[in-house]
Every structure is written in structure tokens, then in C-alpha cells.
Amino acid sequence: MSSEANLLPLIIEPEQLAEHLDAPSLLIIDVSLKAESYAEGHVPGALFLDKGRLMRGSGEVPCLEPTVEQLSTLFSELGLTRDTHVVAYDDEGGGWAGRLLWTLELIGHSRYSYLNGGIYAWRQDGLAVSSEPTAPTPSDYEAEILHPEVAIDRVELTERLGEKGFAIWDARSPEEYRGEKGANKQLGHIPGAVNMEWTRAMDPERGLRIRDYAELITELEALGLTPDMEVATHCQSHHRSGFTWLVGRALGFEKIRGYAGSWKEWGNRDDTPIEKP
Image (cartoon, rainbow, N blue to C red; front, side, top):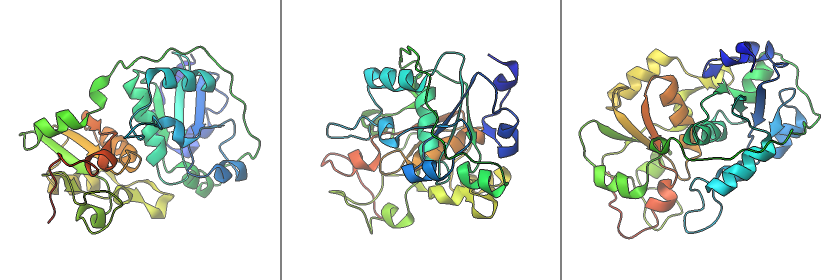
């Protein structure tokens, strides 16, 4: 692996990535919401990944993390190796890219970066895009869940409600949090959860880059979330909270975890406690 690519930070700026596009160890993955975004213009050399493959896709809670077999197939197709440094981005400010990086952390692949702002920031900086699809070089990747602690399930979450030093960051809209909208059996929020909508962590003036860290830390602290705490984050399907998980990591929340079942699971059961204002 090139030592250069190994030094890439968790959050990489477009101009930094532009300097490393030829690094042989780099795997740039475009997880845009719309496939047309990729076709219209992507970071040169980036592979397109259908966001649906980051979820199990079946069962009562299809948004759960994929099975080990699904992950092995997916990352083999993408050409992931132990030495690869992955750079992920999307076309909506980091939700699906964050979900991909959370998945990599789950399988113990810690060599990854997020292209700050995704394709918006890349274009805003006037960098060249390509409309030619990139074909992957397949590998033989055997995925294992090496960092299960990066995820949290409904059972553990239920057991730990109200525990000191443990908090829940709900990344949904205020309307969903308050129980005013949603397509679930039950509406509202997990007891004790605090709400900061995922888009509030983005800077629309700077190509959807992550907002000023000091400001974000201050706002999160005002909600009762501090970097020393263990924080579970969720949304409806752990897509929007893919970004809040990533933001937490960038801000130094070392014990931030993703609840993949999210409200899709919690809000469709009869035995989960629910709060409304």
C-alpha cells in the first residue's frame, strides 16, 4: 500500500483527494442516492455502489446490516483488499457514504475516508468529473464482524435506556421526532433520545461539508451529548444516521454506535417504549 494513501485523514477535502487519485491502493466509492448522479459526472476512477446493498434487504427489518455472506460478496465485487484505502462519497451530504464507512468499521476495515461534502464540494471546487463508468477489479474478500461494538441492537438499546453516560442521537426530522409524521405503526421517539436532524450538521454554503467542528460540539453538548459518552445514533433506516455516526467520529466521539434497525424496527413493534412531547 502506498504510504501516501495510508496517511489520508478520516475527513478528506476534495483538493487532497485530487492529489491522490492515482494511488494504486485507493478505492473510491460513489454511493449516490441516484444512479444518474454518477452517470452525469463522478470523481475520476470512482466505482458506483447501489445503496441498497448496504442493507440486508429482507426480513421484518430489511434495513439491518447485511449478512456476512452478503458483505463478502459485495466487497469482493468492489475489489476490497486488506490494504485498500476506501474513500466514500455521495450526492446528498454523507448519509449513504457514512453508512458504507460504518459497515467497513463493523468488519474491521479501518482504512477509510469521507470526501467532505461529496460530489457537491468536488464540483464546487471546480475539479474535473468523469462520466465514464469505472469497472472494479474483483478480489476475494472474506468479511467478518470484527467490531460488533460499532452497532447496537434493539435489545441492548432497550436495556440501557436511562443509563448514565449513555445517550441516543435521533437524526430524523423534528416532525418525526415529535411523532407528527411517519409511516410506522407507532410515532414518536425512543425515551430519552435527543434530536438533531442530520442536515443540521452540514454547511450548505460550503458544498454540504461538515459544519465547523467547534460549533457542532457546542450544539451537541447543549443537547447533552459529549464526546466522552457512549452514543447510539439512528434515523428511520440508519441512512441519515450513517452521516451522524460519521460526524460523531470526526468530532472525537469514540464510542458512537449505529442502530441499524432504527425507527423502521422500533416504531413497528408493540413492545418498544415510545415518547412524545
